[in-house]
Amino acid sequence: MRAIRFRSPLPSFRPPLPAFKGRLHDARTATVVGRVLGAAILTCFVTGVFSHYLQQPPSWAVDVLPSRPAWGYRVTQGLHVASGIAAIPLLLAKLWTVYPRLFEWPPVRSVLHALERLSIAVLVASVLLELFTGLLDTVQWYPWPFPFRQVHFALAWVAVGSLLLHIAVKAPVIAESWRRARPSSTDPLPDPDGPDRRSFVAAVGAAVGAVTLTTVGQALGPLKDLDLLGARQPDHGPQHLPVNRTAAAAGITASSVSGWRLHVAGPRPYELSLPQLRAMAQRTATLPIACVEGWSRNGHWTGVPVRDLLDHAGASAHARVRVVSLERGGNFGVSEMGASYARDPLTLLALSLNGEPLSYDHGFPARIIAPNRPGVLQTKWVTRLEVL
Ligand SMILES: Nc1nc2c(c(=O)[nH]1)N[C@H]1C(S)=C(S)[C@@H](COP(=O)(O)O)O[C@H]1N2
Ligand SMILES: [Mo]
Image (cartoon, rainbow, N blue to C red; front, side):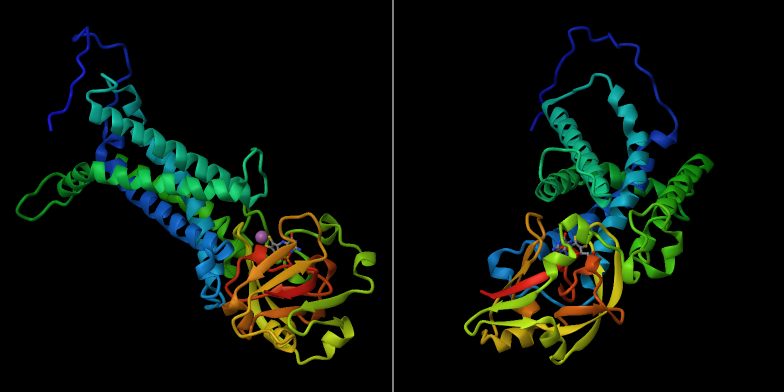
């Protein structure tokens, strides 16, 4: 196909645009940074899609979502937030490397070139918006009129689609900059990475290291003392566990739980008081709360396996369950779980945490804790289980 060329009416005219020389703005620097940025974005994308489907599975998948490994969501969501944070300095470095392209003259050389520039505009805008909304979500700040999760999810496909297109379009340039970069013994080219490029790459690496080390401790226990910039300190909170929504914020008070009973609706419905629940066979499990916002922390939970409560109500082995909280009005007052979670022996209606009865903030009198489950579905202040 012959490209259609635009011809400037003034062929010799070039406005006084800045000119850029030097290899920090060349294709190889763009490729060096782009490779790591691409890996961060793809990691963020895959873990994010996983998180989305664990929270909102298509109906055919509800009963086959894996409830193991118990730490699975903790790892994937920790990676999601860590790779997203690392992508921020990488993206800034990449944009700085390529911004001279904004002053290209003529701005558009052909239809194909126009389309390519348009796709890059979409790529830059969607990745910027994606990282911005994600970062603000980690601090629970939503200064926009749209629902965060749906928009963040939809935009992720736009970002990754335009990234793959960008890589495909640039494949020859990428390959070329690596071919020239690898001097062979028979072809002793000068070292393409002078001290300028090496310092630049080292500085970007240091920035990525700094933002990662000061935030990853929110999910990675051994680094928790370095967690200076993370939204949560994993050992701050009642019973050595952070609280995402306090009882006060959820409108739960001592009077709303007085006379509390657990209602189990099913083929053989029944009710239990707290002492009756405590008298049932208890199980202790070490499971993390892994918040979608990136922090996570293990707790030792004790309570009654949900499957025992369901069996008692005459539920079938394939039954799904709806969990209803005393909390009214919030987004997290109701959750559902498929059979794989409901039958997992580690899925508990927990009554205590780290050896003490649950505090109000952690969901007193009873909450759900299940393995490999996003924190938002670990419903607190449970009052009702409905066999579906
Ligand atoms: N009823 C109810 N349950 C809830 C929430 C809520 O707002 N309301 N927040 C959820 C979220 S987002 C998380 S991360 C976990 C946090 O549990 P924790 O506060 O005990 O650490 O509880 C979940 N359970
Ligand atoms: Mo959460």
